[in-house]
Amino acid sequence: MPCVGEPFWAKKKRIRWDQLKFNLSFLKETLSSNGELHCEYCGKQSLVIYDWCEKVDLSNVATVDHFYPKSKYQSLKKDKDNLVVSCYSCNNKKKDMLWEVEKIEYPIDKDKISNIKKIV
Image (cartoon, rainbow, N blue to C red):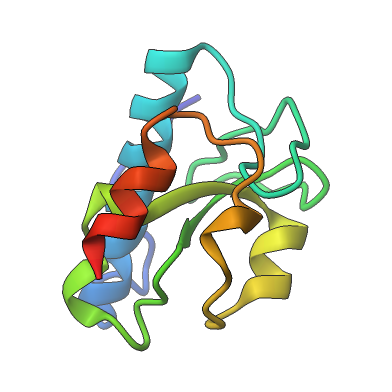
């Protein structure tokens, strides 16, 4: 059953809520275009998109990683070329560190590496 409305905290944390909706939209578009989601760092397959009201299983949740961390590159927080599908484990390891582009060993989009290299 799809989530209806907004979570109780959305009005107080509008920027966080808007980013969550943007990330969810990116994951859904990626799934629609590719038929599946896998971690672009480690290759873990069968990642699942959870909506904001669902209980998340961290072992299979699809997350969005900002390759160039939004904490350091605010202007790229909604740049889809900067977004990487990631499992929870890899996203949690990376946090706001800047990794080498070569860490994206399993790109969903074949142009991902060259697009990321052009951003900064």
